[in-house]
Image (cartoon, rainbow, N blue to C red; front, side, top):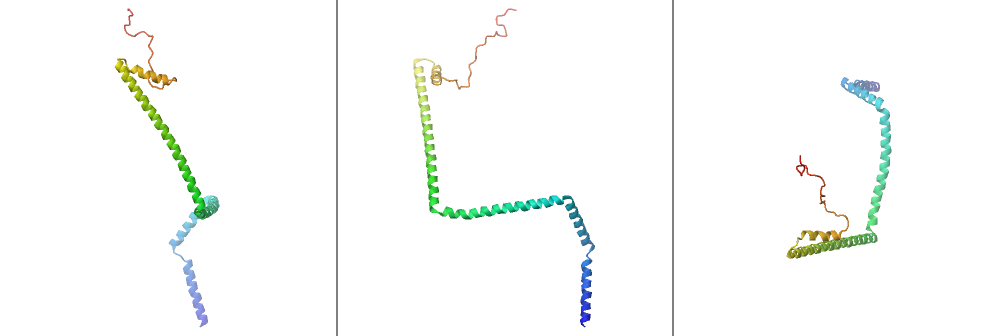
Length: 178
């Protein structure tokens, strides 16, 4: 009985083994195609793939150590920020910097206001001079340009360049007999 049972088991295993070795033609064809494709790819680009894998491994190792260090710093940072002395010093430094910047801004505003006052005073003075010259019957245009030229003895910044008189003869009938 045991012999018959053992023989039955062997026969069943043989059938399963044959079943495992006899795969469908489509599946074996797919495996052959995969084997040929992968084999040709490795034959053509094998060393490139090996070196790129090594490079990726080394790069991953470097980045992982930096990432661990960054995480450790981030975990240590909140402890330092919680200390009241550090927070108070930082706030005082910020307040001092803001105060300094505000003082600089106020000084610039004062300079600008003074400059505007001077311009307004100059305009008012010019209007008074214009009015006086009109009352006296003189032209006021020449008078307004002279004080500006006296104030700035350097080169003129105006964009109007006076034209010089030409010494050339006129092209048509300038008294030349034919």
